[in-house]
Length: 120
Image 1: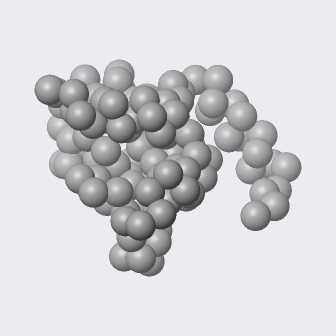
Image 2: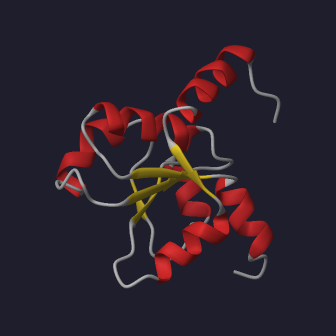
Image 3: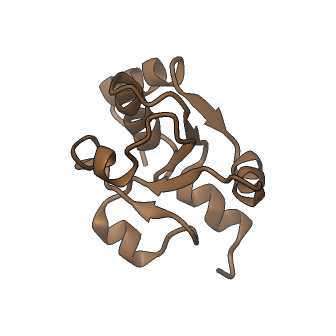
């Protein structure tokens, strides 16, 4: 998908502020004794078509509204993912502005996961 220059500019700005984890780093974190909360920020139809096991769904359109009810402790480790890693960076930037202190975005998103796990 070809992204618009304005969108890419705000994603690059968010990338400077939000920590990114590779798929391998995310999967290792999920196997840890205290795993982060994995949050899928894609649209409802994308979530319904498939998602990473163990993830919760808070779409980017509602995450700022609903995050404090779903994850009230602002120091909770959170890893966000979307289709390719762009929307999750933007969502992570917003959560950090809201005071969440341990937020990361999974680089490559759902596409990276599907490439690594084609049979799931």
